[in-house]
Length: 119
Image 1: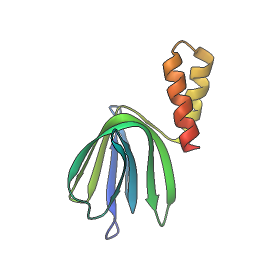
Image 2: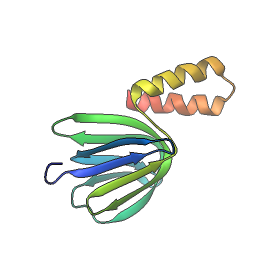
Image 3: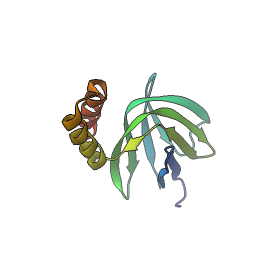
């Protein structure tokens, strides 16, 4: 990993969802948005349901939906433990499936909200 890059690890119960270096991550916390860059002080936060933005000069901006969890910054490593995470295409597919099912209106509304944020 290049010097002065923040290492970002996103872990769901099923897998390591993402593990790369980046210039910055912007998290949706229960108290508001929080930007994390290389050199950030150690901290832990509770994540809300919302969009996570990963910014990198080389790769550009990547957006994904996260479904609550916790995040910790320690020694230039941002570890994010979430209940679930989805890239925009995965979220769109989940939205289509939930729209067909419509058994869980709350789940459908949450997916619609997230999809509007990250598209």
